[in-house]
Length: 337
Image 1: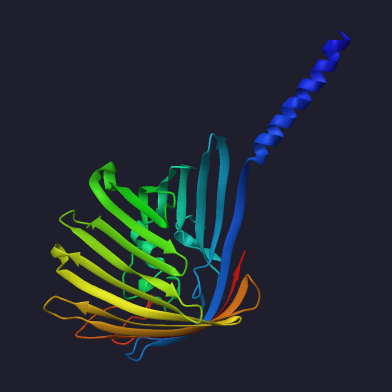
Image 2 (image 1 turned 90 degrees about the vertical axis):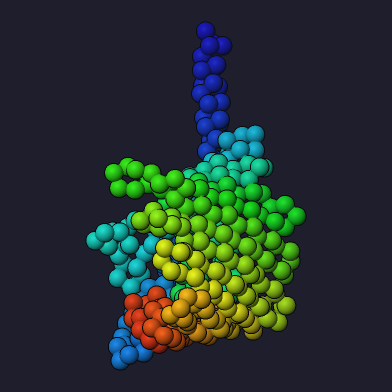
């Protein structure tokens, strides 16, 4: 009887220790960015606005990411990330509610790479991020403005390879779910190949998205990269966007630079859109900026961007005031946590 009585608490303690050990292999991280700026925006045709805006250094967000060790080198992973309007406290959902529209996926990872399911970044967009000194996060960023990047896909499955000799590859299949539950075959497919080697970054990205009428596909090809010389980091990109049904055939390209000076980083880009169709609706743009680190997590920043549309082109700066020559001047504060 004594042995039995001693066994019960010992067994319970072992179970508790095992449970604690299991919990120790799982982790969830809360993270985000709070970014607010004062903006002076104009469309170049007499309409202008001065306002407080959210996310002109980086989009404000609230996110959760987690991982659980499943044993044998296998792990479960997830990410939920919601857009937040820091200027008024609302979210991006209907009525201003919080909605995980930036990322919402779950997956499995291991020595073979990882596969994820849900709303997530397209491989082509992931390739382009490293080609922009502004990290595709503001009115000053070509990928966020006249370069017409589509950042994410719903209902997507993405496979990512492990890094091998500096290379990382991704492929994506996004189901074409339409109203009434009807699926469009291969609605959005994409792939990318990125190469990292010390100061050198090179990447190619491809995406093909079925149009709303399901009569054609809009395709993107992106090639570019960056090189860090230490005293300055140079960036460049060349992108093609095509869709026959929409008479769309354009190329856009930009070059950029980032110059670190202690806690200060100066940035600039200059770019162009070349419309290859008969209307020849081209555009030219440039941007300058600066970021000053107050700490590892907090910085002050400045951005100025201007775009000149030609022959009736309608490219914009993603500030809601589009016109023949939109511009935006912003000064903001950004905190990461």
